[in-house]
Image 1 (cartoon, rainbow over the protein chains, first blue to last red):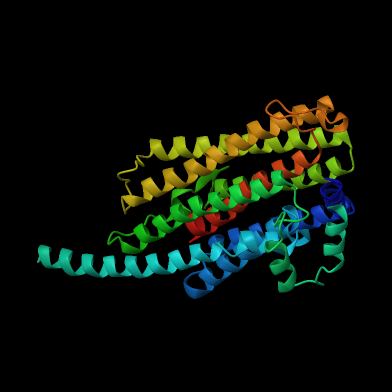
Image 2: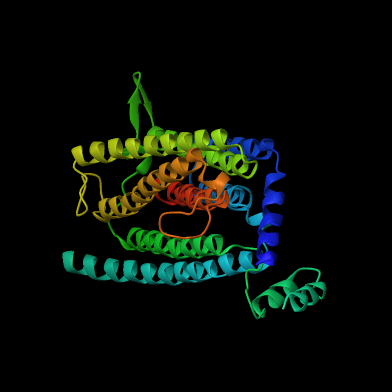
Amino acid sequence: MSEIAHNDAAHHIVVKAHPIRLYLVVWAWLFVLSAFSYLVDYFHLTGALRYTLILTFMMLKAGLIVAVFMHMAWERLALVYAILVPIGAILAFVAAMAIEADYTLLTRLAFFSEGQS
Amino acid sequence: MDTAFTEHRTREPAGGLATIVDDFSADQRAFRNVSWGKAMMWIFLLSDTFIFGTFLIGYMAARMSTTEPWPNASEVFALEIAGRHLPLILIAIMTFVLISSSGTMAMAVNCGYRRQRRATAALLVATAILGATFVGMQAFEWTKLIGEGVRPWGNPWGAAQFGSAFFMITGFHGTHVTIGVIFLLAIARKVIRGDFDHGRPGFFTGRRGRYEAVEIMGLYWHFVDLVWVFIFAFFYLW
């Protein structure tokens, strides 16, 4: 019990030591990155440039929120990996469904156009 | 018992993969300096990640496989403000409001650990107000789109799946924000009453209240903001 209390206290000390300024800087960066995301749409950027910029700003924002606001950067690696590794399953699911959706589109194009002609 | 634990800790590896193996093979607890409350919140958030992940994957599959053109979100969510036509402006404002609420939440956690009772409560209430503002704007957006004829089974601009994806994804997110606002107000009440200063037990538990409750609340709130980052990128900007 004393061990648990000691370790909890250790985390509190680390988090407590953060100056408020750290959170304000991250907040400002999230504002800037969101503004950039919005500008991608405002200037009607298209194609690979649009998708690359959207994904880059998205990942930077997500990284800042998880690492600093959610204190993931200061957690023990066992917890970090227990949470982040399973998210790989979602990426695998995305890949599988992207292939499936592509196939569905192909069959729809093949059958729907045949039916109309 | 205590000495065995101490001895074990002195043999603890310096870091990296060895630490992870050591933690997961521990006989008592895997998440060694993480309280049960925080570990459970993280695991809940992971399961919630899968829920929103499958929603976004479903949206992706519907959008990729439809032969109809997908409605242009930039124009669908445009507003006329002071005679100027601004694309996606409401969504941009909602994004800034939610990010600001995450900022006040992060500062509330920090103030909590400094045991600044009033500042913590004030920042939690500010977070709740920003969250409620977000839900209000979402209600406005839903009303506007329903008025324009968007339904889960069709809309005036293109692929019918647009409506079902929109209502499902933003509806679930809005529900999360609403629950978060209630959660925030409940924690703010506990903070201002001094529960975490005096270690007063909660309603459902005999455990003594601690300021860590504010951090656990914060994890949930930041997650809601995190989900919005992905919805904003994939549903509104893509």
